[in-house]
Image (tube, rainbow, N blue to C red; front, side, top):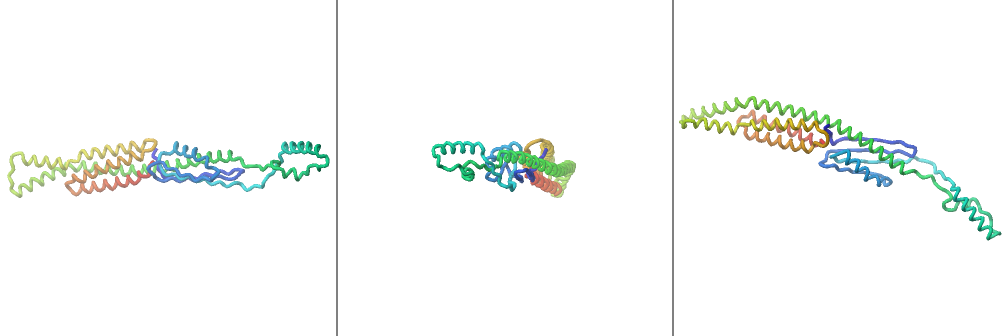
Length: 287
């Protein structure tokens, strides 16, 4: 399926610990060029994210932005009971050595490093959620590129049909054009009252016909049109191959123009080049 390189996707995940939001934007580019904007807490995810992009997309400049908003919460303190028990046991041993010392003050115990613990955010869970949400956003991006790709393929098909009509028109008129050239040459020689050797007139007419013959160019135009249609139905990255075929189509249109002996075929060549350029501009955005 034809895929565009232009698309946008946004995915958000709301959790008890806060929210994660991914925004993905892609535009046309010769190669795959990812740009990741991540909060510092998520820097270690850059490698897996780039690998996911490489496995999913072939071309395009892709900007991926992650926003993390932690949930505002009250600080929860818990007592490390095992540590307090050890601390009390140690205090009892000291008190036996110093009978006159005071018993432990609970506030002093609470001030001891390690007695109180703050409930921390589980970043492993948050990072896994970031990866899962990114995968969803990337799939949305691909679907958007596919939808636009279908539109681009339809526009290209319209121009291919127009090219085929022009080629058929030139083929149909070419015998008349060549006959008119023969008649014109014979009339000019008659007006000049030039006597030619036997068979010389036919030789000149044959040379003229060979110079004006564009059957080969018409055949190649038809072949290239069919090849473009075939490639449009293929999966994967097809943009570069289509761009090459646009160069070949343009080459044949230029040859048709250079061989033109009447204004009509010159106009046909100009129309072909306009259609080819329109397709080329569309193809610049195909993956």
